[in-house]
Image (cartoon, rainbow, N blue to C red; front, side):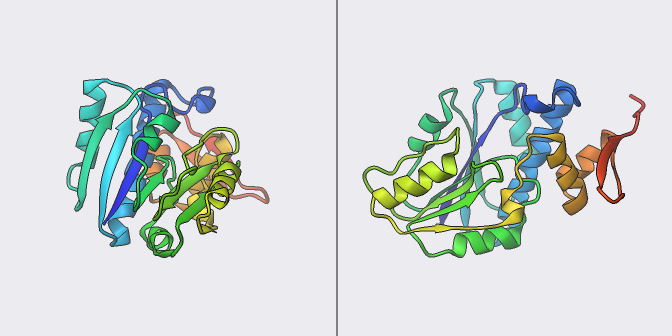
Length: 223
């Protein structure tokens, strides 16, 4: 059994996309990406216990997330914790715990099966901009703590080595594609068009022009 922690923000998420999407659309995008991560966990076939941690203490948002998770074939719960991400994670960090960010729409069960199968004290899956998209802790040692924000992958790698832990890097394109910019949305449409996130983007009118350099464009959708 591996405990999986997924920090999640639903209130005004993905602000760097605010020039292209309304807050309502960004909320729907965030929920779709969360569901893709959860479905990947289910497809992995690994026995997990999921905790989704919302950064806002809002009962309506808790219920909205719970509704999306209904029907998943593994143990899950939703908690609220308004503290900083590092405090949220470190209070839940223990042996056989994985921390996965909620905006990995390209993630799938095959990738997660391989990730969970890596035999090391700490397994780190980097994001494309220096973040830590997935972290699996099999053994804890004094000095190793979560340290997100501002190049967290390099920090986690260094902290694990200093703490005397065996650390492995899990290099995966699909685990490395977190979503923050319009270019990231293009990746979703190219590589995971039938994911929850891909379908969400199509409903919003996003399409891909398959040119020499593929580009994302948006249809005018009738509301």
